Structure formats: C-alpha cells, structure tokens
Image 1: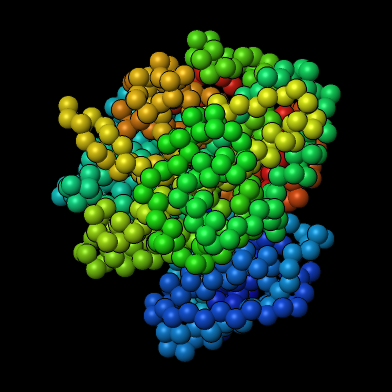
Image 2 (image 1 turned 120 degrees about the vertical axis):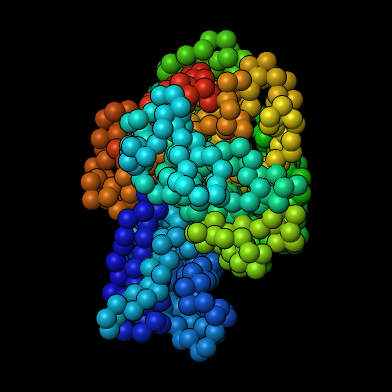
Length: 135
Length: 475
C-alpha cells in the first residue's frame, strides 16, 4: 500500500495504491489525512464506523472520503488508520484516530473529495484510486 | 494556455472560434496575453464545456484571474434562463458556497496603530478560530441552525453579532430568499456543529491592511477610504456545511443530468434544469449555504470588532461591503435590448453592479458597487468599483488566482522562513500551519497588480484603492 500526490492548479490530487480496491481506498484516505497532520503522531484511540451504498466504484471512493471527512469535522477528530470492506454495492468501514490535540502538527484542512480527475483502476497488479481534494 | 487557438476581440478580450459542427455558445476570455498564457489549458476546455450547457444566455466567460477548477473554471461566469431550459450547476457554484470577503473600514490611521500592531495580531490570532482542528465557540441546536440558514447575517445581528447598519452593506441585506433548510443533509448540518464563527484554512484569511494608494478620489470618498487608513478584510465562506451541500448535490445532479439526457463531458458539471425537482432542491440548499456564509462572516466581524476594542478603545470598524464570489443568483439583465431574469453562476467571480443599480445601497448608488480583489499575504489587494462598461453580466475578477500548484509551492518555500521574510517586509503572519504558509506563498499567486489593471482595462471594473497587508491571520 502506498500514497502519492498529483498536480492541480488550486487544490491537491491524491493517489492511493493497494493490492485490492479496498486497500487503494484505505491508502487514498491516508493520503487525504496526511495533508492535515503528521499521521505518525495520531493515536488510534477511538473507532468510528462508516456504512454506505454506492454501485459506481469511482463515486464510492468519493463517498468514502467525504464520509470520513464529515465524521472528522462532526467529532472534532483526526484519523490515522482506515479499513474498508466492499460487499456488492455496500461499503463498511472502520476508522481510528483521536480528538485534535494542541501538539498535533497543523497542516491544511481538506474540506472534501471531488469528482475531478477521479478514477479507480487497475495498473498491473496494483489498484490505484485518485481524485482531487478541495482544500 | 496556447493562445494561438484564440482570436483577440481587443487586447483584453479573446474568443475561442468554434470547430466545424461544434454546438455551443460563444466563449469569451477576459485577460491580456500574459495572463492568458499563464493559464492552464484546462481553463479553455472547461469554459468550452460550459458553453455547451442548455439554456445558456450570451457567452460563457472567464475573468482575468481564471484558473483550472471543478467542472467550471474558477473565474467562470455563465447565465442561464430558466424559461429556455436553463440549468443550475453545483460545479458552477463551487464547493465553498458563497465564499467571499467582508471588508471593514476603520477610523484609525495605520501610523497611529503601528505601535500596537503586534499585540493586535496576537489577540486576533487568539480570538478568531482558524485552521484545521480548530472549532468555534458557538454551538447551535438543530432548530437554531435552521434559523441561521433561513436568515443569514440577519440572524447573527439579531443575536448580538454586529449591528443592523452592517446589513445595509451586505449583498441581499444579509439574507437571500429561497433557502430551504430541509434540503440540507443531516451530515452537512452536523459538519457545521463546531464551525460557526470560524475562518477555515487554505486561502482563507483575516487581514489588517493599509490603504496605500488611492486611484479614484471621488469613489474612495464615497466608500469612506483615504490613504494611510487601516482597513480589515475577512475572507471565508460557508465552511463544512457548504462543502457538504456541494458534495451531496454533485452526485445527485450528475445522476439527474444523466436521467434527463443532458450530456456532461465532465461529471463535475453536474447540473439539472432550474425548473426540475432536482434543480429546485439544489437551489434551496445552495441559498441556505449562502445564508450560512453571510452569518459566518457577520460573526467574524463581531469578533474582530471586540478584539480591536481591547487594543484600540476608540476604534470603530464599519462594514464597507460584503461580497460573495461562489454563487448562483437570480438577477435581471438586459440581453439584446430585453430585460430578462437570469440565473448567473459566478464561480470564483465577484458581482460588480454598475452605478445606478437599484440593488446597491443608497450610499454607493451613484458610484457603483465596491469590489474586492483579494491578493496574496505578501503583495496586496485592490478595491475596485463596478463600471457601466461591464458586458459580463456585472461580473469581474475575485482574486489574484494561483500561478503555481500547492505541491509546487511546498517544494519552493519553507513556511517558517517565509514568515520571517514577510516580517522583514512589514507583514505579521499568524498561523499554526507552516505547510499552509508555504502553500500560500505570495510567489505561488499571479501578479495581483496585473489582474487588477487588466480588470480595469477590460472594462469590468475600475480601480479605487490599493491595500497593503500588515497583519495576516491564516488557517
């Protein structure tokens, strides 16, 4: 599993890679939250579950990222560990993190994932999920 | 952008000729050769896509500060007629619905304020919640939040945040009609829970500025501006609520367009006819987000005044104007000699009513609407005024526009060093995010002087004053 970034004029393109679609989604979430803080410093203290239905796999990536970002803002948390399982159209996820602490490094707030440059595709043995996130 | 494919109407207005058989309306790009060449080719692709949407009236246009956005380019303007099957597009409004600038004039001279400026910077930074992980102090019940979404800045004034005189100088007097809180998802409302009265992150800021140069004494006098004066700009929007509405409706409108047979070359153009159930639903939610943004800037105005009062007991900060630059608004415009009700999308573009417009406050009706082009934290901003030479549905530039991506900026600048360099130039930066500072480096933005000058040369608006940043609170 790995993360990377690509160029966009105003915002930031994120890339998540893994051996499965799910792993690429998890990496994409990691790439997104790493814009906001140093994830090595975030303790996986509290768990939150995510459930949604979306048949389109590309839209599912956007919904997955936006559900996590929504939970982060709603709960005042930052997440560092991401797990997701797709079963047909249904996605069930578990994310772990903690409330923002004063000593956590502040990066830039990601407000949401967009449909720009959105793709979920297999490149050789690797699944790659990418989109532009709005900051 | 390769401008070889464009034709110059005049040195500050260009058009994209249609390919044979291409079905789309006219595309017009405002800007000079230098600004257009600095734009990404995606800008042209995106505005050509907009020109093919149903019910477009006149041309699809970009402003001199345009750059690559989501579906629509940032700096994109397009007007649609509901009676001709015109659409409303979530991509044409943007995610940060009603992001804009509250501009305050003070009764202070910068020269007198300077000895306390560092203290002011520290107190503003402590008072104004800004940046990732920061929350506001206002907690609303679901019923109260619905009231905010219905009443906008009027709700804020009613609850003690500012005064009624502010509302006269806020677009739509601080409250747009047609907001439907029930069209806003529970997730969007939950995201706003800790975000009322917060500045946000990214390119949002609160700046204390010096009026360094006046270009137009008569208009400056009407605006209450003079050289040496201290003024304040607050740039922010509808926070998490607006973004979640954008996200929710982007998917919903993309599916609606598909069902209604509207061809979308880019899914971010997601749209539906204004008169369709989906179009009406989005319109209601978008108006709710506009009211959220207007309330948010009103609360921040109040917090700013309280902080100024601590440092400068005799300070008075009056709202000069409050403008939004990510909206779709129903307005009356004259097209081919006929008056029409149009839904004008301004995505990263500012409304700029000409002198005499009936929706201007009485104080500005003879001179035109105040317009702010916000620059980067090291360069400066401009105050302009709406002009009767404007042929762009009363729209003009909104900012400097990025010249470099955030990733590129991170490779070029170190946040801490940049803040030190700006300090030596007389700009006090307060931020918790060194990454954010680097991404927002002045060098990552286009030349704001050129954007403002070309905006004037293109007849979109006239320059009134140049503002030099002295204190910048960044998220």
